[in-house]
Length: 106
Picture 1 (tube, helix red, strand yellow):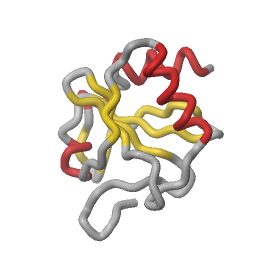
Picture 2: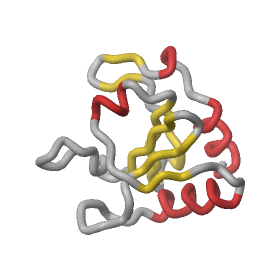
Picture 3: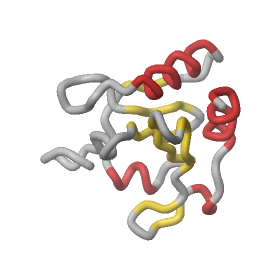
């Protein structure tokens, strides 16, 4: 989902993340999103492993152009996103940061 300005907010029960130049980008907690437990765990995990984290909004176009994209939720933990609106992300394969975070949470 996205807001009136075209900024990604969240999925129906998930939080969205992208990676750009090695940094993990996710929208900061606010009244625009629900603070998910898995999202919070991934943010803490990223910080604990000295991964760069950017708390900022991003547009769908930026997500399509991202090195990686993934969502987090209580039922899927870390789920790679390899296609957005028909555009293939990261050669259609999960990226290294996504796989690294997913392997730690499982």
